[in-house]
Image 1 (cartoon, rainbow over the protein chains, first blue to last red):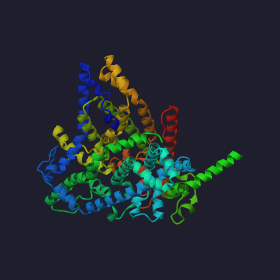
Image 2: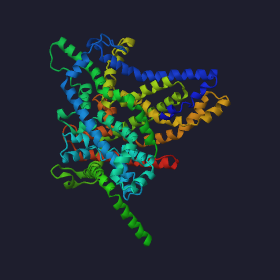
Image 3: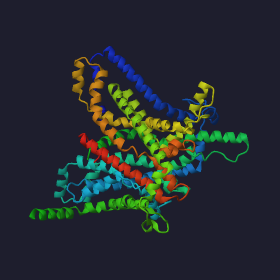
Image 4: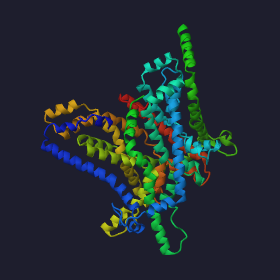
Length: 310
Length: 311
């Protein structure tokens, strides 16, 4: 995609130079119809969710909302923002995402840098150790037992340490450092008496901004969206990340009223709980969606670097 | 003799010169050993009769008894069939869409339309599994959701609960996945298409060949290597379907088709407070071993074909 945009004359653009034949016009029409259909199938559910979140509980319960808010209200959002667990989950997710990503980046970059050093004795072995973790996983129970033995269950560390280095991200970074920083640079720095760590800080880091941006995004989105580790390792409510809170509300339905006897009040509460879910989906996805337009091209870059064999 | 000696001297000199590199690698290595390799040693309880009081190392060896128990249990064929079926279905259904999408998009020249379509189709990729499944619960709710409303409008009867039907589980799982990942999975094809030489298109146009035929005979062959590699690699991951989404979509009514290896491991080992650790580890280890064999085999095939490989 990056290439397609930097090179306006692609297979499609040539069409403009020569007059289109009738066959081409028909084909173009069909393409537009198919792509528009795909586009709508993806977009419509998203719009429906957003429209519902801005409607009134009654309109949502009666199924009146399609693609535009009916009886617009912010009641759903008020309910989201006054819910304690959602607030706690949001804060925790921010902590895990920021702290976790910082640990990830530091660990990944130092590993990638050392492993990109040509001819470093033992680097093949370390590389193999990393690759093997991509192929073989000890499994849920041994990992759980490790955390238990380390006394990390029900601590914030359980969210930060187990995935400190993603092997795939490390390999992307290593490929980038090895391929895009010229060896002459290293030689020149050596002559000036630059040590390995100085070279990392003063030369490699500034030149690797592009790949660091890519892996930061990979790690950050993964942290924000993950629920598996929290699901296995945390039982204390004040440590729950947003995704666990979401699961309890959206899927396990813990918000539904149980013991309310007044039928009218109960219906109102159910309507509210239902509306809250729509608003919650929007609020929970907001951070990623807000930065999405800016990160889109970086994700694409990541796919490109990843597809170059290191 | 002398060459061996000088080689060793070279190595030692390299190591001395780059001592800081080893310093940097200290922490990552520690991480690897503790969080990745120590649990691998922990898998030995799959071959043991695990007693918490005796710990992982002290428990008594019982050979393959835990594995035998799994192979003999009535759950074995069910979780195996479910895992492979949902994975295979996903592989087949998910494969063509990104390709068709990339090919069609590539035939267009208008920048604005192209960019809008791309931006929107990548979007669902960034939605978390929890939110995705939550959205599905809302949309497919038989009484409150848009699916229920439209169904009632069209037929006058209440819609069936799709999450409560075990025969619907695979379709729901796979097609929501196609919805979420189609756009993002097309990125690699779009990139491959952008490197197709323009000369080919121009030459074909001079011969009066239309856009459709050029798509079939110029664009498509250009991405066939990428397609092959991705297909083979995905085939290697057929037993490693993730726990998260399946577990979220699971309920008592659809368990017949939705119980896969990883959810079964969780239930046997961890759910309902401290289960049978050794048995659960054995099932997980069996799964990991099959994955390893598949991926290594598949990589061999890729190498044979002369295309890229994983390592």
